[in-house]
Amino acid sequence: MDACELLLSCKRGDLPRVRYLVEERDVDINLRDTRDGSPLYCACLCGHEELVQYLLAHGAKCEANTFNGERCIYSSLSVSIQRRLRDYKAIATRAVQRESFDSFLHMILEQGQYSDVKFMVHDQIFPAHRCVLVVRSEYFAAMLETKWKGKNLITLKHPLINPAAFAALLKYIYTGCMDINISFIEDCRMLAKQCRMKDLMDEIQHKCKQLYEYVSDKPGVCVKVLTLGPHKDQLQDDMMQLSLGALPAELRVGYGQFPFEPFTTDVHGTYPDIVFRVDGYSFLCHKAFFCGRSDYFKALLEDHFSEGEMLTSQPGVLVLTLHDLSYQDFISLLYYIYGDVTELFPDHTLDMLYVADMYLLPGLKRLCGTTLAETICEDNVLQTWETARLFSLPRLEERCTEMMARSIEKLVGRAEFAEMIQEDSRCAADRLKTDSIPLVDDIRYHITNNGQTFSATEVHRRLQALEQLLVSLGLH
Image (tube, rainbow, N blue to C red):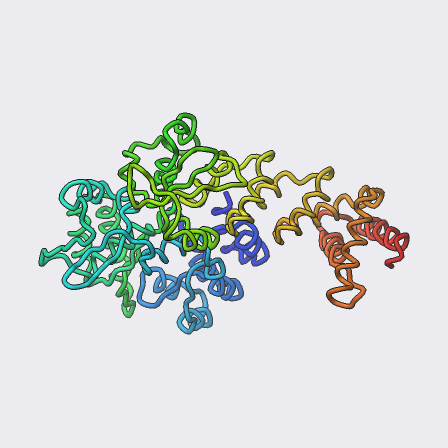
């Protein structure tokens, strides 16, 4: 529903709603509809220049000489939008969230951190991770267990294997995306066929047909790069197999059945290189994921690189015991690290928020904040606001102050609300040497800017209730 609403809001030019969906709801700014239309394409087509500028600044893709970029430029309603698109220096998608899942997958591919296998293609070296290859490709899984078994360097000598096409294939395996020069498309198609990746072959064929139909009647349009993907849902499902494979055998019944498909691959076939022991259970995991997603685990493993217990069945695999969390919490953390999603229930979310904060997982913190925001009510809004402040969750804090604005006439009679305002006043005075109280300012803002919800009389009554409380506290 959010995806449809974002596309519709871009067609209407509703910038406030787009900003809310992108910044508050975390809707993918580069999503596609069934006709391959993106939010940026809709905004360009309908001539909303201010909205186009916002989307570009927040990571909308519009690279020159790509199908998506040329399509946006060609379809723009005004010359000024076309000029803005041509002049704009593209930034990486979701650049403001460097810990995001897609950025992480790009990073471990490009930097090769904790890689355990390398491919040599015509003197070019490509580091990779067996665990990713086996869950993303049945061909690679079979070859790593047979012809390539035990090899750390795999040399691919076939003269028809193009290094650029192999690099594009690896990118598709890791990220669900592919950007390939038009001149290498046939090389990619042949490589996909060799690796028995039918979905990739079909998508290459579909995109080539789409591209040909688009440029055939548009003189001057030059497309040099073909872009495939993203396929985030399939990518997450595949990566989630690693989290299910990490579960101890005795915990696998009941886990992995909902919301994910049961794990079907041999656990030892995922090539674990680190074991975490929690509550006596051993979880077979992968350094690339834990260190790449969490600075806490990166520092922990660097400190224990040459010390600690080794796994008896697999010498060289370090075993580390984690304290201060239950195995149930670790399973939820496991799902998030591998698949960027996890199950959160109201009575469990606060515990996971502490876990996310302790293990330096800001994305999981935001996920907890989103879950808590759905439970805000008049009875718990004060405690939830304090939680938002404690864990630095500005979106949750804003949702709380919005609820406070609606319920202010009841809240002014609660002693804990008065204490919160007094404490915020003291903190603000210490920091800013000003009489401004952030909590009060936020509540006032939501009261006065809720014109569609409150009548003028209701706005006045709510502001008066707040002012009377401030007077009684000597803060007017």
